[in-house]
Image (tube, rainbow, N blue to C red; front, side, top):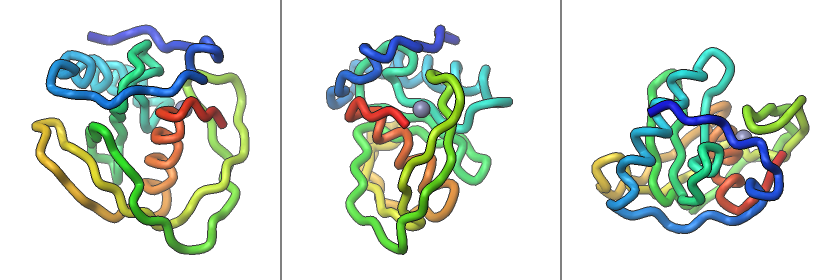
Length: 137
Ligand SMILES: [Zn+2]
């Protein structure tokens, strides 16, 4: 179900908890809400639809990817200042992002995955995982 986007900064600054199989509906809702906003949004964290769980959905190289409890296990390259915007916030801000990251996560079927992402895909994942810590751009 498409959910309303949370814009309350006090809520968005709270950290998120690990997700489990009881959060499948949130995974579906997050994908539906991202899909509904894809003209202006490439990724969303679950707290943006009001659920403080570590789930992200993003279009990575144009493909919808769900990550449950993702952890960035490696960062490399020279970090660069990128200008980003967020559907939950007004305007844009700069954030320091690494060009290459490795990530461990559970996929939509709760299968353990490990992957390396570069460039814009890496930037999106860093932005969304910051949401889990209550970090806003
Ligand atoms: Zn955001």
